Length: 256
Image 1 (cartoon, rainbow, N blue to C red):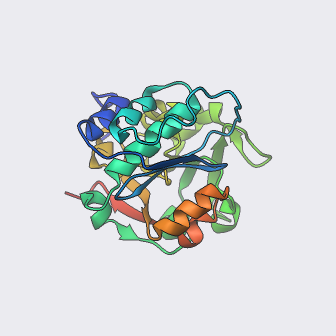
Image 2 (cartoon, rainbow, N blue to C red; image 1 turned 180 degrees about the vertical axis):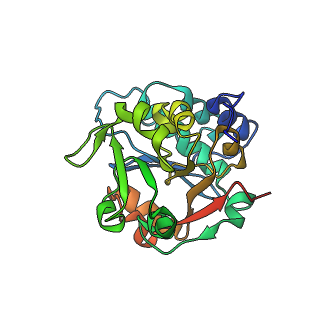
Image 3 (cartoon, rainbow, N blue to C red; image 1 turned 90 degrees about the vertical axis):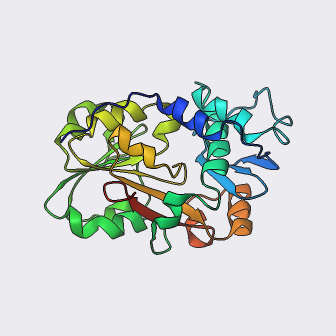
């Protein structure tokens, strides 16, 4: 049975999930690759914008604000604000005690562990990957894979090909960065015939993603907060997965 379009806007869902929370942003960093919001209990992550800016209006004003107030920025079309908003949301949603994260299956250390985990199930399937992951070709070598990228390399398709490519796929790996740039609803709809995995450090651990046609959540668990924060501050990318965080997967088709 195909998933029906969700009746709620994902932005409203995320904001509602943190409404009334008293957690405060103790530190906030927009790193080269990751944006991070630190509260008293956890670190929330989101992908940083690829563009650069020297004219942001609010640096020096965010620490001390409630994460719930920053969360409203997930609706912003300013990519820096949206990244900050999602990191604040994840600092609340992905805190210790999150039921879905707690029941998720931890994977091996590494930024490609999600693809390594599912590779046996991808043999003979058409696979779509939204977002280029460093080293992906090595892990999925020999499989029928199409990578869609906003800034495509030689082996990638432009993200505008999604309208044609994703409906033909058996599996789709969808980066949670799509929550920041607001392409998530359409990409999820285009992938409704496939097994769809929402993944990445930007991903909130929410069972409600099943309402959008997501079958599997592949988010991260912070295993070393000190190292995670240091990597973000020092401009790390995939290095984040060496010591700071690890992927875990939760199948929404079977979870309760």
